[in-house]
Image 1 (cartoon, rainbow, N blue to C red):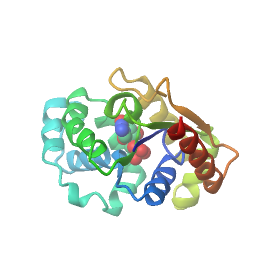
Image 2: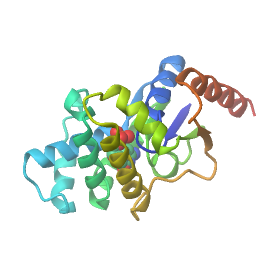
Image 3: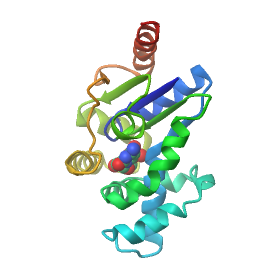
Image 4: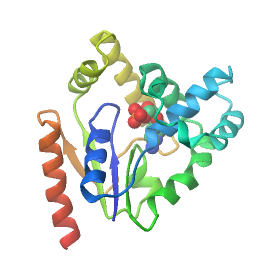
Length: 204
Ligand code: DC
C-alpha cells in the first residue's frame, strides 16, 4: 500500500505520515528533508540559489544517510528548501529516488507537497492535510519556542505562497485526495480519521 500525505508547512502531515508508517509497519520518507538537505548544502557552498543546473548537481550528490541531522529541522533550512524546491532541475534530480521509495515492494508512506500529484499519482490513499496559518504557526511555535510567533507566521505565509505559486509541481491537492482540515483537531484525532478513511478506501 502506498500512502501519500501532502500539505503546507507545519500542517501536521509529517506527524500523520510517521504514525501511519509505524501503524502499517512500512517505510516512511519525509521528502521535505531532501529539499532541506539540498538547500543547506547549497547555502554552505555559497551556491547561487537560482542556478538550477548547479543546485541539481548538489541534489544528485546528496548524502541520504545524513537526513536526520537536526540542522535540517531549523526554520532557515525550511526557507532554503522552499527556494531550491522551485527549481525544476532540482525536482527532476530528486524524482527517481522518491518514486523508487514509493514503489518498493513493502509499500510506503511519503509526505511532502507533490506526492499525490507527481511522485505517486497511483497511491492507494492520498491525504491533503490543511490547517489555517495561525494554527500552524502556533503548532510550530511550540516546537521552536526561541523564534517569535509572528516570525513563524510570516515564514509560513511566505512559504505557502512560494510553494503554491510555483509552476513546477505546486502545492495542490490531487483530485482524488482526502482533504483533512485539522485546525480544530489534535494529532490523535487526525490519525483516527485517517485510519477510518484508509479502511474505507482499501475495502472498496
Ligand atoms: O515539508 P517541509 O516543511 O519540510 O518542506 C520544506 C520545503 O521543501 C517546502 O517549503 C517546499 C519543499 N518541498 C517540496 O517542494 N516538495 C516536497 N515534496 C517536499 C517539500
